[in-house]
Image (cartoon, rainbow, N blue to C red):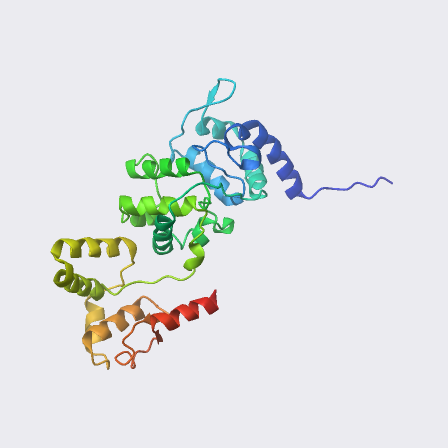
Length: 305
């Protein structure tokens, strides 16, 4: 009687994917998907879905394929490579790269800008790219420690429209200033070193009324031009809580005595906020939503994470 040891399908597919990756991908994306060329991305460690989505974006024309000259003098591009691969080959390659370890590239970066980028990322990007873009299970391209030159090129393609974005991403991307993008770039190049200072699993918003208050106080303190710049920065960095007629009417009928505070509570309620952070504990005493000072909320976050 013959005894046959059957390898698991996952192992067979990964081995097939390795052969295809070495033949079709390694010249640009490096051994095991870790690129040695700063204008070409590392992909080893991306999730299986992220790799398949990446390849589909070229197949469907959502990304413009860039011509790359290989060491032997020949030229190729991603559109040609994807066209040559069968669905089974794409599945195998995706599985192979998903089995690899993501190894961030060590690069110099501006620490102050990276810290600002961490804050912007947490507000604008963290829901889809948690922990600074370092989580494969999020099924998106890994950003933490990717090559600077490659990422800068992607930002340029987004700006020019050469690369399409999902509607949800485009709405957020269009709110970023060039300074915001520069800060995000430093944050990603830092390999997400400052993401631990913020929690991607927590998000917040400023009440709409706070922006007008800041503008009013800043105009008195530093003048109209500087006040406008400060408010513009806040608008580019912070999410704005919901505000409409229904919120104002419900706030007007609220048992909270201060109308502005009642508006904040109603806005928080509509957005399903878990907490309100304020220094005005007395006036928020009637709030149905738990409230914290900034200090006590920070301690709560530390316990949660």
